[in-house]
Length: 510
Image 1: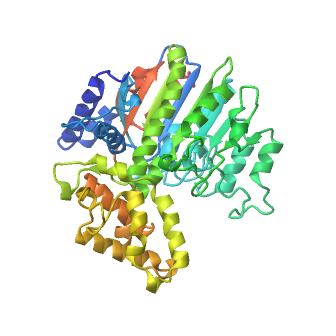
Image 2: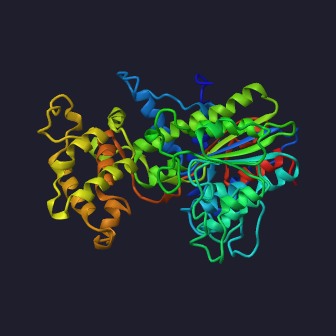
Image 3: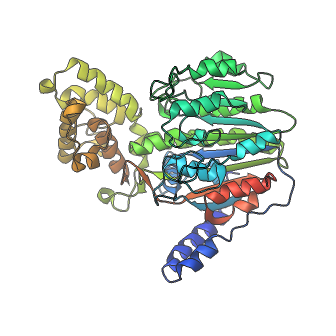
């Protein structure tokens, strides 16, 4: 797999560029027609084991950054990449991501397109844009056909992307109502992150009951320790498995913050294969949601490490393909791009320095915790960057010109302008949130993140030759990779709703 030529990918990339160029000269209806002519018809026998991997917020830039980072670790004289295994899958395509509201979509609308095959609006879970009619995700049809169903995510299991595979809601923010649909479902394996608003404190439902208790009443085996999770198997029944450690907003830790011995996304995929094993077969959707969260925060290093772990999780499914090549289909895609990540920065011109990202030892979330401790013991008028410089050096490798290691590592020395940015950002971070100036300029500089933390990631990103354009999503298309039964349907350029249509045809769903 690792040495396979990516000629198909190259052809698809060339075709995509040509289609964009030609679209400027051809009538719109002709371009739309040609775009819609993808093959969604499969006449073979349906596979038994279907895996759909969604890198939330992952598109070409996130994949390329991870491959370039891995290549840079070889320390060769010329640029080199180390391909992520899934990029060598034999079928490669490109999917458009716009929704019914905008060219820049969210995870609810794009997830609905992939799970249920319709275009809908921002924030809507498996309903039409007018929020009048429900649509069924492919998982319900497959469950009716006898397949077991698994939904895995390293962010809350009632977040938008996992939710589109079992729920219908007018708003992705109806966390309690979404969780109720999970607890009342007959699906077989929910695993990874925790549950947002499990007690319904933010719900309009009165006298709400904890959804964990409801899940238990409905026959779910609820587990949250490493020992309990590793003991699961195909006799465990319906399972709701939550990571023993949750880091931020009920999500699993970023991969770069995961401690030795703690469960990873790969572990939950491997265990899901055990739990779902049965003679009829199963469908498992796996989301790496923290790729998206890292790019929202413009944390390139965190994004890269989570993308690498996403690849590791996919390889757990690939072991099933190697054992049952005629009965398995694996699809890998993103729902949208996040952050507007670019490989290139004005300050580094035609160069990149990915090895500098190796100096980052923790995500922005963990540095936020360090900063929070500093704020507890330091009055705003007493703050000084010098207090926190040792922590900055430990977390990001960055240092001032007076540091004892400055001559040994000049590439990580802060310029006068960068140091001034950090001093200003620290002043902003020391302010109470209600006193912060959230003007347009402030939002461009810091988004909604800790000013010091996000400024540190920006500086290190830029020194490495990377940059971000937004704290939100973008309208980039996403790649699609496939291997196994029906893989040929995923070659080409198509809409994200076609991913559903292709899966439905391969699974003989009418």
